[in-house]
Amino acid sequence: KENMEFLNEVEVKSDDKLFHLFYPDGRKADNALGKKGFSKRMVQRVVQREIVNPFLQLKPGQMMIRMDGKAVGSVDSSEANWNLLYKKIHAKYPREYAERGVLNGKIAWYEQKENFPAYYMAYFEKLDRYGFDSLGTGNTFYPNVNSNCWFLFLRITDKTLLNRGAKWMEKLIDKYPEDPAWIDTYANLLYKAGEKENAVLWEEKALAQAIKKQWQSNIEQFTEVLSKMRNNLPTW
Image (cartoon, rainbow, N blue to C red; front, side, top):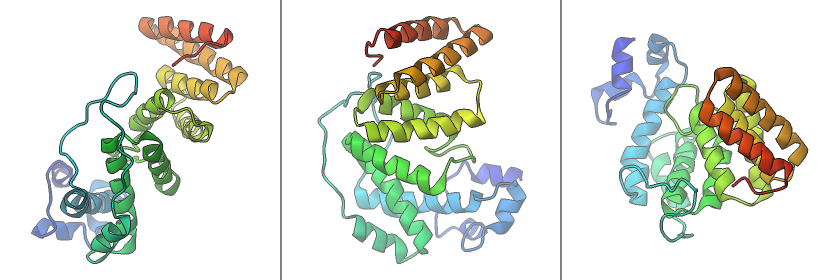
């Protein structure tokens, strides 16, 4: 198990002998770690590094993010040749890796281009297909879903996308019902989508949890948000 956890931290390459622990049959590795899907994730990371990123010529490293959610630079609505990327992945790996590789590529591409509507369309498609990442490192891991939905709230006015975000936040707080910040994200999405009454109820729950935990900064923030909601003022 310790060896598998170590491998999770290193960059395994497709021509490494270690790669055969995960592909084509990674059940032993999954069993050793006690995490179903671990091997597929390791393979998907190889696909991303060796095929997707070079094909898309993505910039390495973390992107700059403005806390108000607005684009740092100019928005670029260009598209990559997704069909060709699919073929490149599928030439070496089964369809499931090609489909997920293209979807991960779209998410990374649209994020770097700051094409936020397209980014969230791809992001929610990933959630709809694969659900939460319970393994703990991907962009659909629980805290990362909250972060994505918070920036969705700041960036987006389209009610369809706001409601899709609210749906996933509802599922998230079903799993973790006592996190004030996550409840606040859900309430704000509801409010911006036009569901004021429901939003106020959930913001009251966020405030109650913050008071219970004695999180002073959240208490002040949520009290202000509640006041804005009740007075029909923007919370973004």
